[in-house]
Image (tube, rainbow, N blue to C red):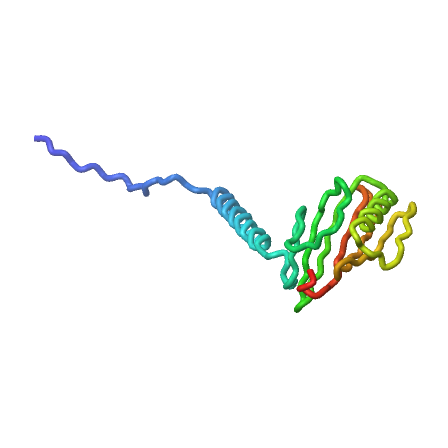
Length: 172
């Protein structure tokens, strides 16, 4: 009879799991930190963009490319491009301002405005001097409205600014 003898057991080796190098852990953590930093920065930028542009300007309405509500009627140079307008209210008073741009000389624009305002019944505070300068203005009044028109040469064309200074709200 044969007897089997137990064989001496070999020293057990710990189970081998894949070794993770310190380099791999370092790169993993670096990528994680960079991802977190980018994600946090993006959230910060988005929060900054949510801040309204007109903080601290109560009573001011601004529009780009359109006239604000209740803007007084006045002659506008043909083919003038409206850039912006605003309405400012302070207690019972209200003021308006708008800017247009045209491809014409200051002389051409002022000549047109003097004729158009005269024909529309506006009365000039002083007779405007129309000449070949880079900036001209006049102040006119009609039916309780007072307006200042400034025409000036800019790099891209000629800028027309119409400003109705503060007036009683019920007169507009």
